Amino acid sequence: MNASLPRTSSRELHFENGSAIGISNRWDQGQYCSILTKAGIVGCGIYDLKTPAEFGQAIAICRGTPAQPLTEPEDLCESKIVGCTPKAESFGIRVGMTGREAVELMLKVGE
Image (tube, rainbow, N blue to C red; front, side, top):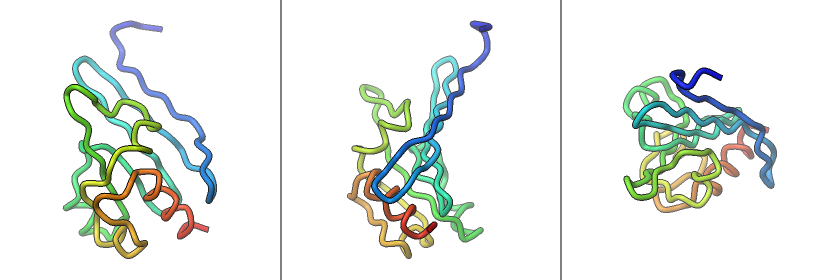
């Protein structure tokens, strides 16, 4: 492994309503993570909501802090949703619910 390259990893995550892909990307002084479902993405605060909303995509975001960054997809599960697109809202996703709850709703819709 080349130490100068950024790190990326993906893995299957299992939830009550099905499976999704967890993704983590890290580079010098930066990172982001997401959980990809058939219906949309639950991701960290690096994701913009404006463009996906224009395309009718379901995106829900959580936000970490410098003291507790969201680096792995599992970190999203207990984090709170701080924003989402209208499509995600149509699935029942709301600000304040956990990332896990949002993933479960997306998995239900994607059946």
